[in-house]
Length: 103
Image (cartoon, rainbow, N blue to C red; front, top):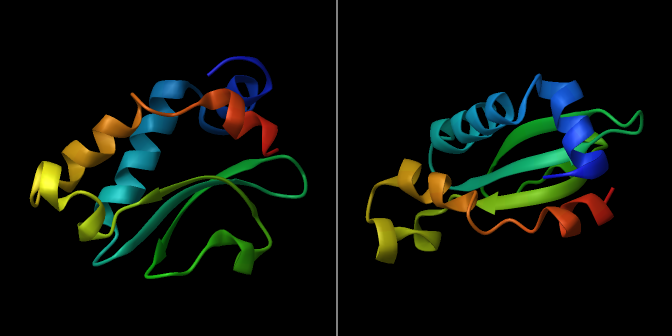
C-alpha cells in the first residue's frame, strides 16, 4: 500500500508487517466459518475484526474497507485445510488503491 492507507496502517498498527501479522492472526484464529475485516471508525482509526458466519463490522459502527472470506468453501479446492496458506496468498491480490477509495 501507498499514500493515505499506508499512513493509516503504519499509525494504527506500527508497520505493514505488524498489520499483516494481526490480520493473519484474526483470519486464522476464527473458529469455524466467517470473515476477517479491515475497517475504519468514524475517527479515522483502522481496526481488524473477525466475524463469524455472515456477520460484519457494520454492526459495531465500523466502515468495512477490506473483507476476506475464510469460510472453507473459499479455499478448500486450492488449499484443502491450510487456511493460513490461503491467508498468505491474500497479499498478492489486494488492490490497495481500491481499499483506499473506500475510506
